[in-house]
Length: 334
Image (cartoon, rainbow, N blue to C red; front, side):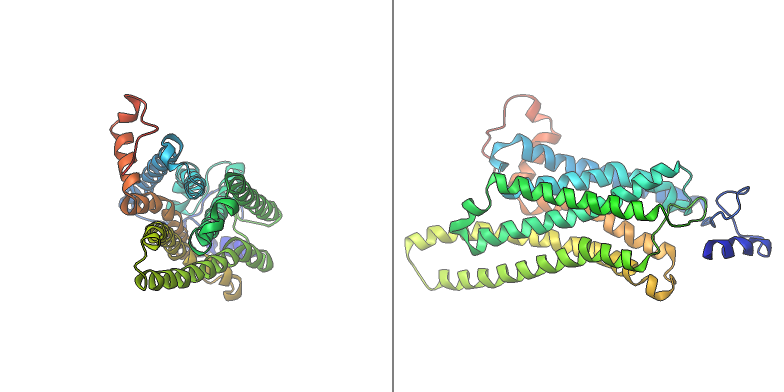
């Protein structure tokens, strides 16, 4: 109904441009200057390249160097794969749509883009949720860590994260097939209950779980720090070294989670409240928040490089091509 009303207004407003001139019920095209289009294409292309290359460095590092074969890093590997797919699949498909608000490719590609977009964002936060569980056992129950977070358990966590993400993406996309849309628009969802359920299970519930776990870790880490300060026992000092290492890893991954929430929270809040505001939030605002969320996939590799000296070392070895000059898989990283 809304799209039909907008289309009819073109009879009275001469400067409105639409996606398809000869198709009734077509969508209105966003008009921007050539300079803005060029700058937008440069920005999105650069974001896509940086996201793909940065996460590829993380993936190669964890797979190639045996020192990085740990449960936590396998979860980081899964996160990097989802971020890599965002850079390689979602960003290129979204370029033209973001510039003109029109979708000129095949409708099936629109469905693929929407399904991947939803699935990968869900996968990222579920992987972060798994990482927070890993950190909980590493810091709060270090003696039970190796038995609770084994390689088998990590594989199950990764499979569940990707399986649930795929089901959410495919399920919402199938529901979207039965909604009307104007021609030229990559469909959005207008069923309030569906939007709320998707946001709840894909974002709000995992985010609440993560925040609760990291709060628990923070309180336990504070207790450990006070305990370390009140003793001079050599064995405790040895344990303190391990505890300090785990706390540093936890702090780094908490930063990853925090930046993820900063990037994605505005988008999910807009999408959640959009039905209750009679869809009054402008599409460019939601699209901007969506790009803020997608840019998170580029940030994570830089966080690893900033906090972890061994990631910086592996990045240098990969970029310089040193790993192709010999077998460095067993190298002792910094």
